[in-house]
Image 1 (tube, helix red, strand yellow):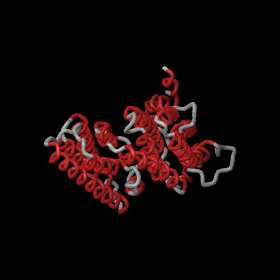
Image 2: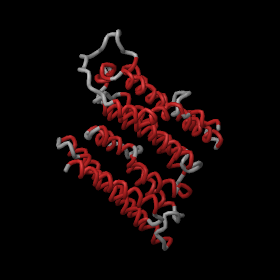
Image 3: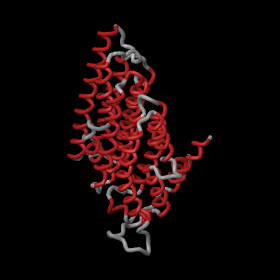
Image 4: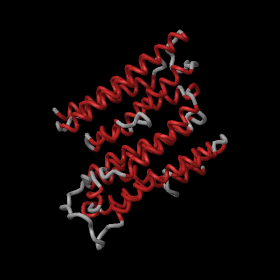
Length: 343
């Protein structure tokens, strides 16, 4: 019964996302976003723990507020233009409200405080859904309306997200909160070129999803939830610890890994738009994220035997070799697709 209910919930999430991505009406898009949000609520509260109930409540309140703003902005736009079409939003007020609402749904600063709490209160695989799949529908709507969005507000929100994501992640010991702040920082990079080069922003968010998926799967398979667990991951699977190290360094944007590609393209676009000061500030903000990525990588792979471990060694788990084999192509793509930049 539990498996069947999970399948129904995932089906509802998928249908909601498809409704948003395939419609040109704000009403259908709003209905798809509502279906998407309601379908994931049982998955968040599935563990029957006070933290998961709290996380589901915070997620519901935040998404409901954002949905109200979307409906309000689309109603103002329909009143001014006489149409519910997504691509027709010439006025500044509804476009600004829509940007705030959609970034609230994705967890970008300054409407980001719900994301770390929600991801900490649920399972790793549900956190994977929140940080990847749940961002597709709002991101498609932002991409569709990118030519009407206010560029100054978008740049300010992007800078805030990169700095707050980096600062917030440095002080965390729980990996789900750390990945949440990583998601906030990456949303900042996505917003930087949203109005000038939206396709580049889509490349950045898709690359982040490609990197995040195997990372969360590795953490879930090895039951790793805190930094203390990272110090003994080598007792569970040495291969997983090495693979996770490369994935984290790729998310940090170190060359020659895949995560370096979208950051380089975004910085190049900012400089070409005569926004050199903003590009320098964004690069400095990425150093904040690099700190906690390097800390996780150090605990994962540089404390291997015969080095001293900082915590009690866990019992060795029986890893499913078939699942690891199936996940290897995704991890390899997440690490070694940088040469496509030069094609």
